[in-house]
Amino acid sequence: MSRIRTTLTYLTLTALAIVFVAPVAYLVIGSLKPSAEVIDGIGGFVPTNASLQNYSGMLGRFDSPATGYFRDFYLTSLLVTSVVVAGGLLVNSMAAYALARLRWRGRDAALLAVVALTILPFEAIAVPLFYLLNDHRNTYYIQYLPFVASAFSIYLFYSFFVGLPRELEEAARIDGAGTWRTFFRIIVPMSKPVFATVTILTFLTTWGSFLWPVMMVDQPQRRPLPLAIAVFQGQPPYDWGQIFAFGVLMVLPVLVVFLAFQRWFVQSLASSGLKG
Image 1: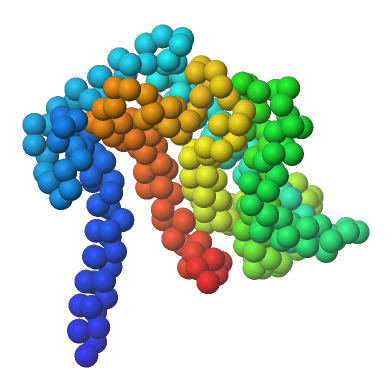
Image 2 (image 1 turned 90 degrees about the vertical axis):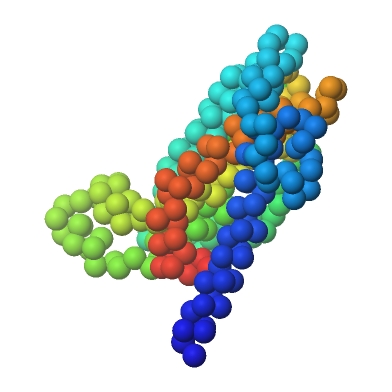
């Protein structure tokens, strides 16, 4: 019976893996095929007449200030995402530590506000935020500044920090460590799983952000990749091979980041109760 259960488990996991991997495989294979053969149903998985012409053709279509340059799209996305991820890890982890470990007036109210904000979608505040920051359109900082602080990230850090043993912090205080030293020398090294989780989730959200750039960016030189590919897809001549090539280059950093942090991400799911 256990062997049958194990076999069924592996078959189910294999089927799920195929479901998730198939779109990425279709994207990569399609980017190497002639445009006329890309949208070909199941036949799209067959790598016939493979070449890199779609990549060179796509890059060649971004060759002027009017169209923008692909390198500018990439650098914009890398800059915005890096600032949001790095700044968010610092700001949100410190905020969560203050909520989880420090005693101060109004802490419970602040925690309640954080929990309430986690269920507030960005679309609900997008228009007011647009009117508030309209004078700063087409800048780099307007694309990352509103997103460094995140209620959801604070709550993830808070959920992890409250489960850490207090004895380690008490021992650090006995040794003369202050709050800052305790946080950076004791708490942060013990919290790699939640840092990896927040890194992955923040990277995915920021790298794929579309609504805010649509509202705040209309200069080609400041477009991030999601906005650039949307504009590219709507411009004739329509070439699905080149669109797929653009998609591969856009997805590649996401796969790299996930593979780099997946071990701690899985550990976080198993240890902090996020899977429930």
